[in-house]
Image (cartoon, helix red, strand yellow):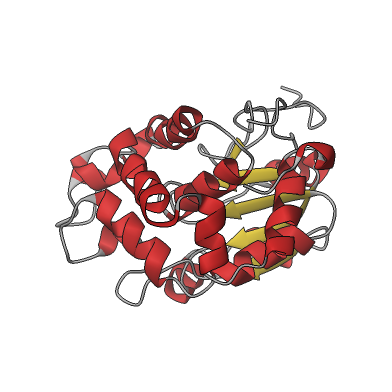
Length: 248
């Protein structure tokens, strides 16, 4: 089957990845849609086929942001790190206690992990500075499942673009369907609750509500964490047309 990379794909037609999706096409508070071919969210990219690599190249991918920890990368390196058509960056979007959230020895509500991730990570400024100043073209960011760390970053990006909360939450919820092959308890590492594989709306809603209650908005949260206003505006410009961007 011929796959046309010039089209706008909600979920990219990749053989090796089930959860690679667009952030384009969402309604915004600015009366527009988020741009297509600007930002992609994805799960593990260590098993990309040659056909998938070519599709991503032709789709416009120029920048890759790997949110995983060093231990995860050593076990499953991103094959795009060796490709000449894009630049690869690793910013471990983790806490001191937890790399991949599902492997934590603590059994807690997933939404609490997300809040911990928001407050204790050390790379927020680096991630947003890169998105703001990356080469023109598509940026793809990913973790292992493309659900937790990737989901938190997608939530912040969509919020900056003026996307409604219900659309942000539904964007997160789709991961469970796309990662269905990981759902059975038999496939989970010993001691990992099957709930940790879900992308229930209540998980992301708790993180979203925490940000709005504590900081009033994602933009104010980013400013409080040291992300410059100019950087935030440039990130918005990647998601929506420049003329429609306002400071919230």
